[in-house]
Length: 182
Image 1 (spheres, one colour):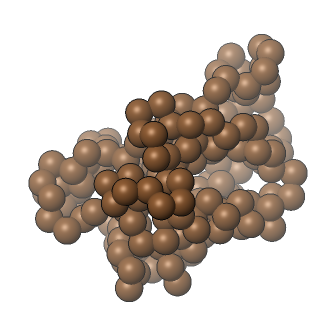
Image 2 (cartoon, helix red, strand yellow; image 1 turned 60 degrees about the vertical axis):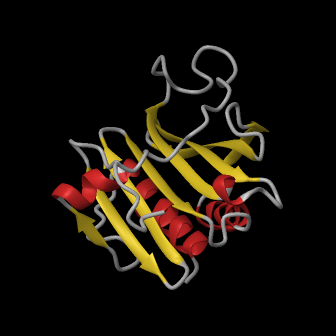
């Protein structure tokens, strides 16, 4: 599987079912949990669980903390990843809505796309997807998705008090040391 396919599977088959309250025994692809120095080196959250999924084209990282997950990788198939995620979302959650797509506020060669996924029982997820434009320079060829767990009607939920807020630009954590993680 490519990094884009792995990222889509982690989001659609792991993160979203966990928000729904489904018991997920393990990630849908083989990965390993990072601890200590390894976790700190890639900028994993101190209080969360950080995993790495290795592919032949590179590594996909997933950091789970509180009511959010951050999934990211650099280069590889990052230009194809938005289409792979969109197709996987529509297959698994046909009612998923793309809210908008805007230029990335800090990186001109990237865009940000937002989705809302109704997971039933008042549970929602808002996905904020950062991805490169075709032909982006190497430093901007990354794919990052923030998966937020929300409750319908809560003050922070999209649509609770008017239209959804514009998507925030997700960015991967800054690595403490560059040791081939990106």
